[in-house]
Image (cartoon, rainbow, N blue to C red; front, top):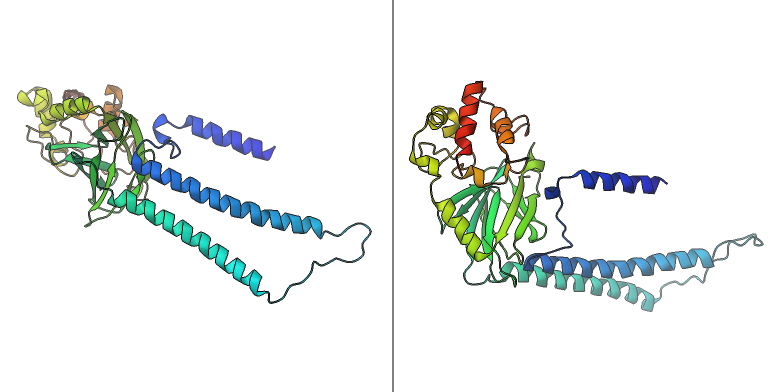
Amino acid sequence: MLGTAVVALLQAQVAALPEHRIADIMKPLASPAEAEKNIALFSFAITGVIFVVVAGLIFFTLWKFRRKHDEDEFREPAQVYGSNQIEVAWTIIPVLIVFILIGVTARVIAGVENASPPKNVTKITIIGHQWWWEVKYPDYDIVTANEIHVPSLPDGKAASYLKLESADVIHSFWLPQLSGKTDLIPNRDNFMWINPKEPGVYFGNCAEYCGTQHANMLLRVIAQTPDDFKKWASEQQQNAASAAAMTPERAEFEALSCVNCHAIKGTVAVGKFGPDLTHLMSRQTLGAGVIDNTPANLKIWVNNPQDPKPGCFMPSLKLTDSELTQVVDYLGSLK
Ligand code: CUA
């Protein structure tokens, strides 16, 4: 009864989660994640056999030597002292099992870490910030945030090589369907690679507690056909169309302190502390996945980011209604 109730409660909680909070490590769609799934199943099988043997022996003994109704005293099984054979057996077998697990794990880790990615990789630098992801493409001169566009080919032949850095504290980069976790550590460069085998959106998150909004440090990989990726990249390389002309809305934005933290290519906004906004409207979410990027949500976010994401480092600027409308209009032009 209680078990059923608990399961129902858990199922209801999972069902209530937004789709992007669920990514199944048992459905890998890239080489590193596949290798990790296989080794997890292998370890589970070995430990499962150990469990069945040990638990089986315990239950067999309990049953065999149980006290029967017509007995006054316990019957003891034969007591064996100092049997070399038994001691050698229960030493060597576990040692062998441990060495098999070590060997297999080391081989998979080395395979994932040393595998030289295919030749024409896309190089991407990812910088963890409290609580968002900065994403740079050094070969394309693109800076974006929280959404990593990568090319994808069915056989996994299109790989992306990720350089992982941190701007503040330790974060951990995790896309369950693509690869295991890798930490982003201040003053250290870590590397990993992914080769999504199907176009689509892959959800991930920060996997190392990094402060108040750790849980809302979400990321997504958007895997595209090479043609779509090229199209996206060339759009990102351009300035937003609105960077060509000065409008009252843009003038309002540039007069506010937004420009101290955010950059918009082709304008006076060159701040580095917050996400680059050059093509803000091309992104799916705001606040590193905390809300969808819709006009209504953009207004809520700009009005007071502490409302959807309490504790984040973007303050409410306490804009007047007309300032807020102008800023949101201008941001909406950053396509
Ligand atoms: Cu970044 Cu947790």
